[in-house]
Image (cartoon, rainbow, N blue to C red; front, side, top):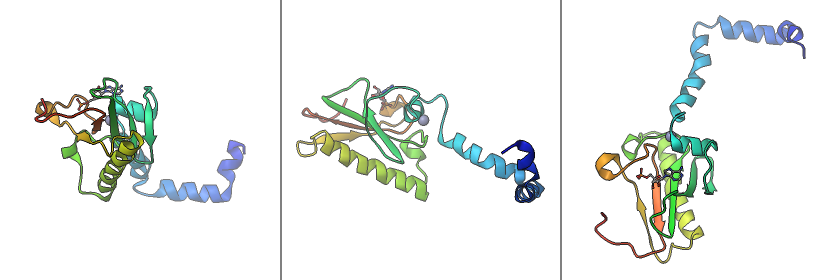
Length: 156
Ligand code: AMP
Ligand code: ZN
């Protein structure tokens, strides 16, 4: 369709007039972009992995989460489960339906990964380091699934 035809199409003209005639059309245009920006950070390493801009060894993915091998494994099995939405840390989770579903999906994924990696019966550990004293180095929420060897307590 040529641009001229597009603009002169009566249905399209009435849609454009209605849309741009609204007082708040600017916010209707900008709100989805702001939401997208809030959910993804350009300079975050795990957001880049989610978008496929940095390579990773993915073992599982669904609509809400991605799981991949840790680049510096601390045990024979060391997988990270991260939400696709950029949430900096566990204390930033909100009491919203969206975040409740994300948390549920992360836990469900941990179970899937434990079975997939054959450590469910032997045992494994889930770790969520939070803030400097918790040892968090990447500020995009992630659950470590660690297994395949005897775990010690207390952790270092
Ligand atoms: P934390 O110290 O709890 O924030 O954990 C961050 C984890 O991310 C560490 O275990 C790192 O080895 C791991 N990591 C950092 N960059 C990457 C990457 N590009 N791919 C996979 N794992 C990564
Ligand atoms: Zn991120």
